[in-house]
Every structure is written in C-alpha cells, then in structure tokens.
Length: 109
Ligand code: SF4
Image 1 (spheres, rainbow, N blue to C red):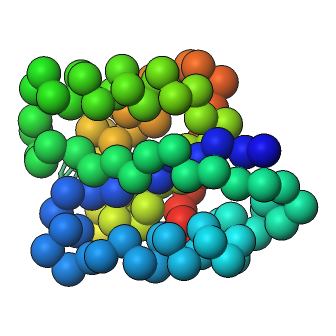
Image 2 (tube, rainbow, N blue to C red):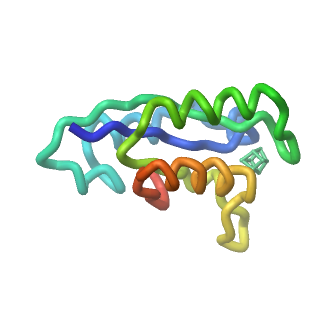
C-alpha cells in the first residue's frame, strides 16, 4: 500500500476545488497511474499558508506531514510558477518529506 500526500498552492483555492487531483487519485490516472497495481491511501491534501508565510501553523503542518511518513509526495501544477520553477515554500516542504524517504513526484493530473 502506498501512502500519498498531495501539496497544492493556497492561491489556487480561489479557482480550484481539488477535484482534478482527487479524480486522478481515485481513478489512478495521470501521475497516479504508476500505482495501478497497488492500494492507495491519501494521507493529506496540504495547502500552504500563503506567499512568504512560514509561521507556527506551517511548521505544525509540516511536522504533521512528516509524522504521516508518506511513501510519495505529489506536487500539483499549481505549485509551479509560469516559468516552470517550483514555489520555494512548497519545495521546502517537499525536501523535508524527501529526507524522511518519501518519493517526490511532479504533478497530480
Ligand atoms: S507560497 Fe507558493 S504555494 Fe503558497 S500561495 Fe505562494 S506561490 Fe502558492
């Protein structure tokens, strides 16, 4: 069984329900197709606390994510800037989870 965490951008909240990510997860399509023969469990759907914000809440959320010991972390396309680079806040979260052994995956759907 693979334990999955999805990371998304808070700014996407204004236009995004998360339905695209969850559909791909539930149907094991797009970047979740790699798990076609495995059971999946979505452990968390994380959004940051806004640009430039690393407050106590963010630290608490990161520690919670670490405690979940996910096998893989999927970063939504919303976490990338128009030039294709990743938001450094999301990259910081992803890097911390990578250190615990989680595989980092670019994209959800
Ligand atoms: S910090 Fe990054 S992920 Fe969060 S709202 Fe800003 S651009 Fe989006």
